[in-house]
Image (cartoon, rainbow, N blue to C red; front, side):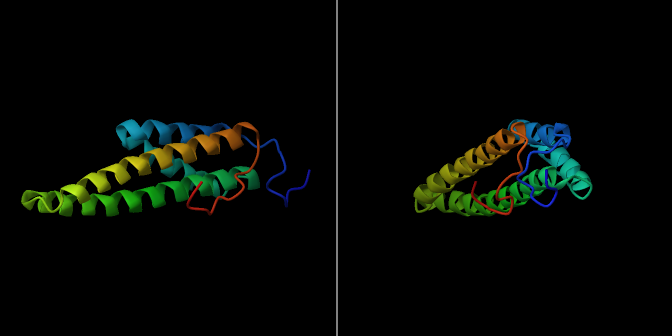
Length: 132
């Protein structure tokens, strides 16, 4: 087994990354556990082996990308809610609310896909991607 190739299955501990994925998924309901998962991911990324480091990097990027999009959509929802008073903002409000939900689905799919790779003992193949 080569330590330079992070896609090689190793005997690294998969417990904490699995906990972080679980906290992220639970955070879709309560919001707070996502922050706990982010702290755990940041604390363990530098000491993890290459396979688990790819998962921690993926988890950290998932949080920051999701937060940026949620905040941006939140601002747009607020603006379109104000504009809906004069009926101009109603279509935009509906669009941005739909996108808000779509980002939640994107977040959940990223977590599930990451869990699948983790359960197989594999590194996440593209931890720096913003899609899936």
